[in-house]
Image 1 (cartoon, rainbow, N blue to C red):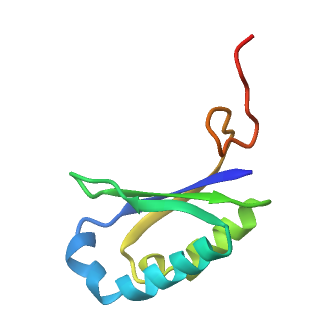
Image 2 (image 1 turned 60 degrees about the vertical axis):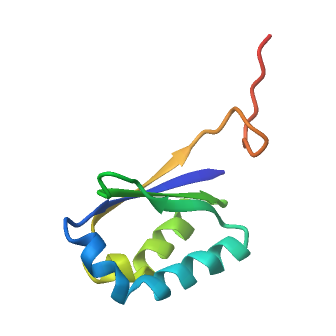
Image 3 (image 1 turned 60 degrees about the horizontal axis):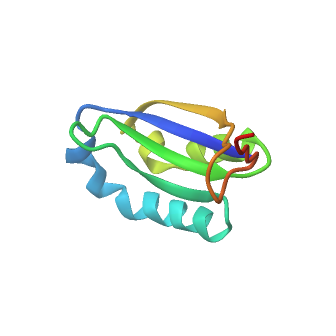
Length: 100
């Protein structure tokens, strides 16, 4: 299953992220190497949200990722949301649906 983890970023996110970025990126790359995290990054202009795409069996794994993320722990993320994403188009879709 695919899950989206969305972050609502603090207004001073860009100014403060440097202190926590290496630890955050290490956590993300470790999840990617385990095949759990597919893509991740902050939205541009404005950098007020971030989106992380996971491929895993349960939302619990995604919740645990956020709970360990130094951006969340240190207030760079004001709120986060985990939603199952029903993917139907694309090579990585979990439930491919073709026309006709």
